[in-house]
Length: 179
Image 1 (cartoon, helix red, strand yellow):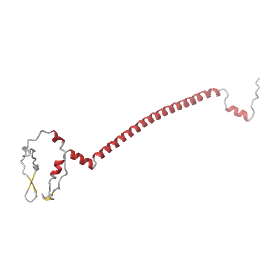
Image 2 (cartoon, one colour):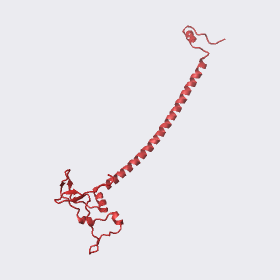
Image 3 (cartoon, one colour):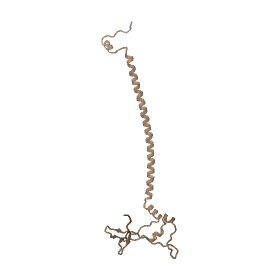
Image 4 (cartoon, helix red, strand yellow):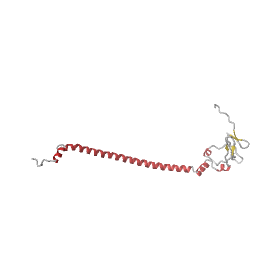
């Protein structure tokens, strides 16, 4: 009936260990499990790859924006350097009508004056352009000299008055009500 001879000896013992009827049925769940694991792995790799690509695009945008902001910062720093250069400061001060001051004097803690104060030279004050506020102000009502030009009196600070001997002393002040 069967054309196969029955195994003998060692082959018979091994044949008893492996069941013959259930071999195909046991393979089907294993194959499905392997296919599901491979499919899940591929889907996971696809999601991971998309997230990395999106992060790469965001990184490029941020780097581009950082470069443009760095360029803008450098341009602003160049402007600051140009405005704070000594010659630019001197030019703008002259445009505002400022002149270099005279020799300074310093007050010591005991009230003594160190140095000899002097006013700015009048020629520097008259040759520079006037301040923008002075150009838009109403004409002066100061008395005119015989040549028709208004006279200007140098202003002295109200808080100090010169005393004999070149020292400065404070002018008397009136108390403010309520203090």
